[in-house]
Length: 111
Image 1 (cartoon, rainbow, N blue to C red):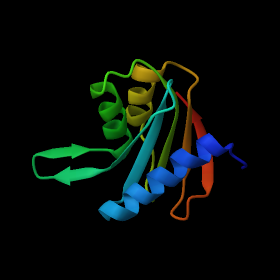
Image 2: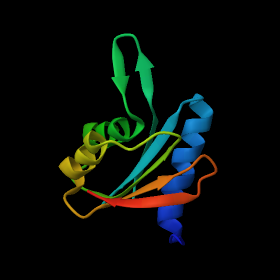
Image 3: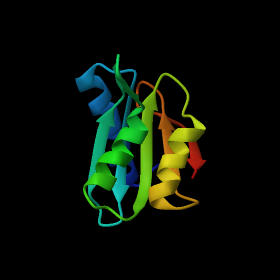
């Protein structure tokens, strides 16, 4: 699958965030102003949150009112709850790119 440069950027950010944190998953979202937010999954005894839901939360806590696209790099599955978080902030039909360990997009989901 060939992505445009902006979509490739969020895949690259998700992959880099995952590697930097040593996490099972990394994610990035792009808001309607072109700003990006990246996060890694958190798995603490008292807090567990997926990379995608955390990236959406970071965007929302920054005052973002809409998203354009999202990307997840993970060795696991993207859950319905992850996609629901994207839909909550970005609306329906938003593209969620799912990439494998080397950053190759293996699926595109719609919110």
